[in-house]
Length: 600
Image 1 (spheres, rainbow, N blue to C red):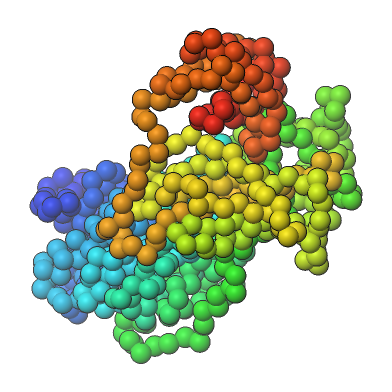
Image 2: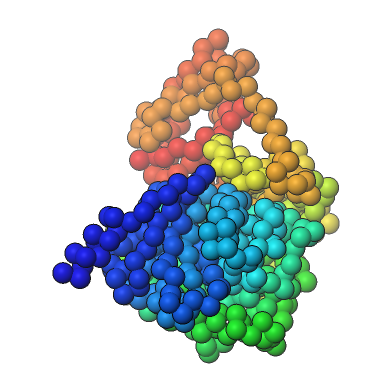
């Protein structure tokens, strides 16, 4: 009967329409159905019932990218009940599932106007979970609502981005990102977009008021209490290697907004919980309440910014299950390696084969957690097979590492790569090749772009390797970086960079999209190739001899051949394709375009 009454209440609530929002009146917390999951599509303002002991303070909750407020209404989230019991007016704002910081920030700013007018209050308190915290800062500073916010609480917010978002920009790894449920809005949450666009704009904004922010950053990716915890156990393991202590999505260091108030230290015993838990009332409400009731409350946690936050390192290389041509190779001076594997199936099984395709027995694997397996490696030139898609991070015991540093040069960047030993001594090897696969994924304001990949090589100079991005179009680029010294070592790293004038006002950003005649195109058919394939051109003036290169997914050249055009626009390249192993490849004709295709 209680459930029936609750459902009737929901179907009879008052629906009001603002410019961008559907407005919904919730029942009291005790009558809130556990089946209610909030909106799935429409941006919505959910008004909690005004408590009889209302204290005149309004708290506005905004979700992260995992949902449109589902997390705020989970049966084990006490925020609504706690605020109601203690006299606060709760409002839950659902912006968009994944449109990014700027659109969500603008929507949140609009909702603040609606809410302050409705309840006749000059200011509200913001509580933003995950990227809801980033929407809060955009609403306050970029969209002018600073004076309408008394204080903003950021729960597990990756202000400096997350490596998981970097991974999401690699098309051949986005299945790993989807496992978390955080598959939307990643473009404006990459480490490089936050570092090179978001932080310079907002931290230097004339209206920036960092002291209004209170930060709750968690450290326990391995200790989740919610039903979604297994997905975060996967992501936390990846992040620990790449960015250190984290909650499964947000590295602790990334939650530190400069000038804000920090509640927890890194590895704080009070904050050993995961990314979903930090967004639940039973974990965070007592801290939020204490700062609301005591505005002068201060902790002794300080912000420590790295002396070179643009430098990242890798002691691994990556192999993918889709590519039969990729092997586990030990470095020349390495006797041991660890394959840390993330996989699509939670209970994936693995087998290892030698060069003769003979199964290697006695190779033990260890299931760290669901979606994650560790295999020790003592032999070289092995192939890893599984009943699941996977990505294996091969870590060696010899201490060789590759570092990537971003050096600002006007409106662009110079990418600097160094190869060094464990004691940071540079390894000088003239046989080393450093190359990258790049893709322009977004405009400076985060709008999605779908462009063909490109292959770039780094020039050796003064014992380092360099690539100048100034020749590229303005925008945000993903980068799959690889270094390789034949029979000595190889390393991989996933990152990205930004080209353009980030000092412009965000609303004034103009993207020059005249990079090619839209009538020109290059296609390979079919895209999933077996033994036959044709490459076709439209709108290009072809030379008599057309040079075609085929690369593996790291940008390494596999084949190079010429075809006679004879005024034709379609060419059979089956003889070159059918000799390839199964996997993902890139193909480029002259310097026209680079396409990705799959060999089945």
